[in-house]
Image 1 (cartoon, rainbow, N blue to C red):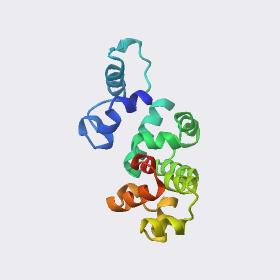
Image 2 (cartoon, helix red, strand yellow):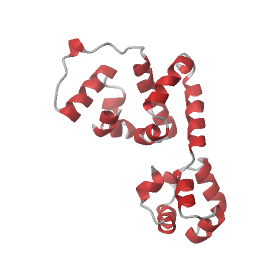
Image 3 (tube, rainbow, N blue to C red):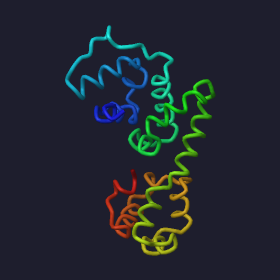
Image 4 (cartoon, rainbow, N blue to C red):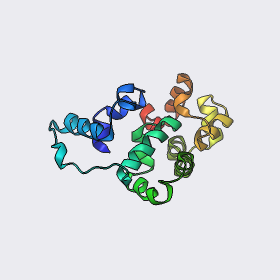
Length: 174
């Protein structure tokens, strides 16, 4: 997964590049990731077929969830590690994809938002942060519980929060 993210193919999928969304098989993606990150071309005959395996399912489900949630692959994997995704295979691989969305959304809601972590790090209440950043308390609460996506907020709102929290934009939006 780290190589996948490093290869920039994850970004191509996140951006909706049809070459990667509909134009390549899982094996072709794997080969391109390896070639981009290591400079080597693996012998295709030596590669085990992953069709219908737990690794194949995780890639398929992860791509669906990325599109559904709008979160980056890197962000998803920072909250739900690959090993945990593999662990979901037995219970979810035959279920409707919507069930996977529900499970992953629940894991995200339990993980706590970056905004909440950064707010607690500087010792502010939601009300204090809202007043200092000129953002409504309801917005702060919605961003923290994930019902509003901070990455889609007005740029000035994010800048105000970053200034008050004394952090980088990337700290807040990852």
